[in-house]
Amino acid sequence: MTLPELSAKVVLVDIEGTTTSISFVHDVLFPYAKKNAGNYLQETWQTDDTKEIVKDLQQSPQFTEYVKSQNLSASVVDEQLVTGFVSYLIERDLKVTPLKTLQGLIWAKGYAAGELKGHVYEDVAAAFQTWRDAGLQIAVYSSGSVAAQKLIFQHSVAGDLLPHLSAHFDTHVGHKQQTESYTKIAQSLQVEPQHVLFLTDVPGEAAAARGAGMQSIILQRPGNAPLSEEQKSDHILVNDFTALHTIKQPSE
Image (cartoon, rainbow, N blue to C red; front, side, top):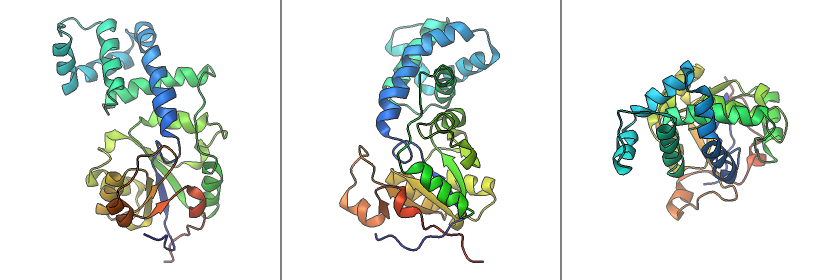
């Protein structure tokens, strides 16, 4: 599809493959969380936050699968068992909400220590500024926890981009290929769905957003999954945010 004249009140951005390279998430963030999960759990095992995460991890369907696959007993849940389960989930890139919460807490320590810097593409900061100058809101919807989202933008290679962002959504609102999630987001933003433009790299997410009445565009960043010819014809495609500087507020 060719790029039409665009108008929106809110630009809703995905992170992985949209503002940030997939390789940063998979080659930097995930290994960092996996490497540091054991120490983090050991240090915080008695805290309320970690107890809540561990309880939620145990209630996930993958926990039973993991315990059976490792011939372990679920009656004794200690740091070692949970660390192994966390590694199991990370290796399989499973979108389990308490895992995302735990990863966000581990990454927070890494960012605070200067061991991590959030990757954003070179065109992101300028686009954020341009959209804000045009009176648009910018919101984020990612499978990563809200805390993890904020860390990437606050500690980004382009400086602190957090002030540009007015709202954050993660899998607590629903999964990203479910239309209901986007309906909830529009309601939370108090904006009609047609006035929200969703930017993502995943056709299934773009289709779900469109099902809720939103506009959507797919980013073809380096390293993103290739699209089929049918997907290319069904969606508006751009290579980066530069082509989207002209988004305007809708005329009332």
